[in-house]
Length: 223
Image (cartoon, rainbow, N blue to C red; front, side, top):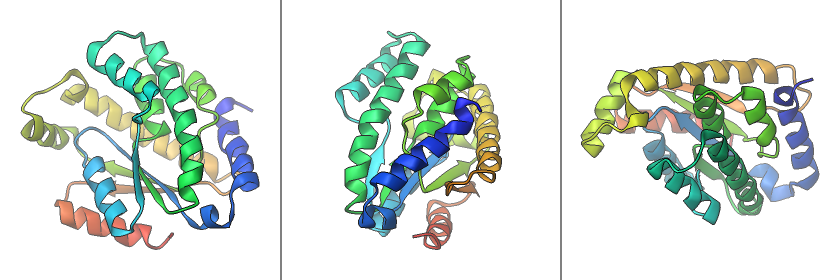
């Protein structure tokens, strides 16, 4: 059995042993998608509407600050950044356990971003799963799917520039990788003896309010 097959089983074992009554009721909801898909806006809107805690990755920890420095200045090798992301996530998951005792959590990006972006950069996918094996399994994963041309129009309208990670051709690759990983995870979890995440893919080519209402209607069925 590969590390990829083991990750959900190991972490759900940990969750079942450690969750208290409140944290079992509260949900860990993750938003993923390419740049410009609206995930940050929609994560905040959902968190506000369901009175959840809004989280994000990389975090604002010291490790998270190193990651941002590496991304902006290009001062780390891709393998180093992968390890930093995994380390930041370990610390993040400790905080998640505490926060889930109080409320739902909505997170802007999570381990799926690492899998998609790092594998696209040439890092072996089994290695990525292995270094992230302690990542908490979310309850719900929302993938906002959008045509990269439309997403880049949004990004350029917002920022006025077109950074390396926001070029259309790159985002096309990222989108395909997200769709592939999303389907792989869903199919894998059908065979799991543990409760897998609920995976929701939504067409994000809608107005902000229309998209928010669709997300809310789907999420409220599970919380």
